[in-house]
Length: 368
Ligand code: NDP
Ligand code: MG
Image 1 (spheres, rainbow, N blue to C red):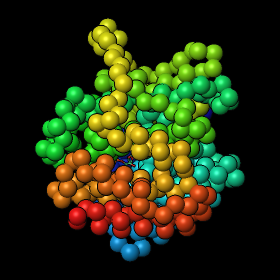
Image 2 (cartoon, helix red, strand yellow):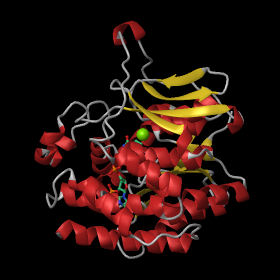
Image 3 (spheres, helix red, strand yellow):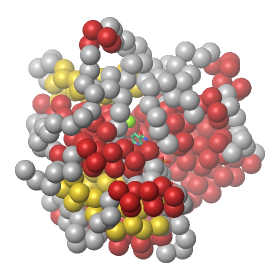
């Protein structure tokens, strides 16, 4: 039985708080040795009370990155959970890999932006990348170490978000408040908007491409409003495996920490008779253009996924600040993808430079 000594980057967020819940639930298997907060001092102080042995770090301010890297490489840790929203976790994640730590990745943006560099660094140092995003955690559980040649398709499930049934003509009137109200998951603000535009699923298609080493043409999306099946893998022999649980991020966090073991916990199991039914439908690709933009970015590769990600972050911020209408998020991402200079096999610095350029371009489009 292995006890994981875990650092949480972003302990004050929605994922961070779920991870602390898991740690309280399975103390024999999970010890918190470090945690970071960006601005939320109160939540960090509360967590520090529960985990008095953990090193606590605040990262807001000019030396934030240094502090994150220090925490991510601390000798007492063997697993780093990256749960920072956006791309600020990229350098600390790479530093953790270099220091030989396994990585549990919730921050899908870093895999979209620099998936090739992260996976390559992990392969070189022999560390494990454990997916925390529920879809990828589900796929990870279904594949269980099998060779990718046995896989025909990865099928990501998608709740459809709060506007699954809303007519397109009403999209202009969508307010941040409505877009933040997700039907099945409780999450941070940025990912909640991403779930409403389907950019969350777009990012996840690219994330899957890197995590599992398959081309984006083998990554599909099906809408499943109940969010019980978290994703599926169809194998070459025609069999499909699915992973199911209630929609609670404690499940994938628990599995990432206890992998490869199955460990009892206090999470509520499914009651199938009470669920009654599970539904599936095709996504409305024309009304929610994020998925087609992901296929384009994932097929062309290079810096294009980083451009999609950066433009989306700026557009989401602008929407939340009341500066743009909801459909303009797609418009800005598409325009920045069309305009931003492309590099085919970028190094890390080129990816970071492209990210900066795409943000600048997107910020200008916000003002138009
Ligand atoms: P939240 O907004 O709830 O939390 C974000 C965390 O990141 C907080 O701890 C925040 O600190 C910290 N943070 C924000 N900006 C910075 C920065 N510049 N530098 C360092 N730390 C920073 O987000 P979520 O927990 O919802 O999401 C985290 C990541 O996990 C995202 O990438 C998301 O896509 C992914 N994810 C989330 C899921 C969910 O259910 N929530 C599901 C699957 C993936 P503070 O609050 O102290 O300012
Ligand atoms: Mg997800």
